[in-house]
Length: 186
Image (cartoon, rainbow, N blue to C red):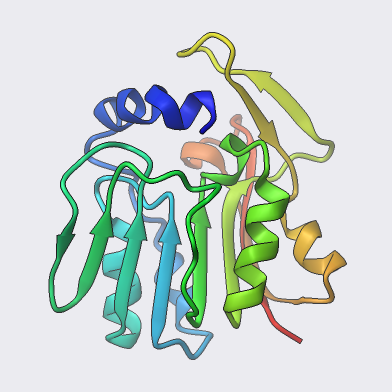
């Protein structure tokens, strides 16, 4: 496991216990595709995006999170905590979601390749810099975040960008550019 997964994931989860606010356009993006099963890798402890996905399609959801916690299963969803996102065996599904997790993973390209083998759609919601950026992470020495346009890996594999929304991190016009994209299998 990498340094983020090894311990910083728990510290991050404590600092962000409420989870992110869901952007008002997120539900609309999901309404543009037909899906019946979702895997959210790096879903966070608040599970907000899984709730939105379920509200759109009524699908059963699987959330996989690096932070520690107690696994639980309900009729609507399964939550698995303390998992290594880079090595998790992604089950076959219609949609795999990555929201602000790929920049933590040194092997993000390989994780995306595995996801493309088992799904019809990939949702990537992350930073969207003009040029690749490697940043030392302020909260944990030795951890680097790798900000990239991760959708390029989908494009390189022949996937088609279905829809995208650009915005600024924390909805602050002076903050970093971000993008949420849905890619579909050709």
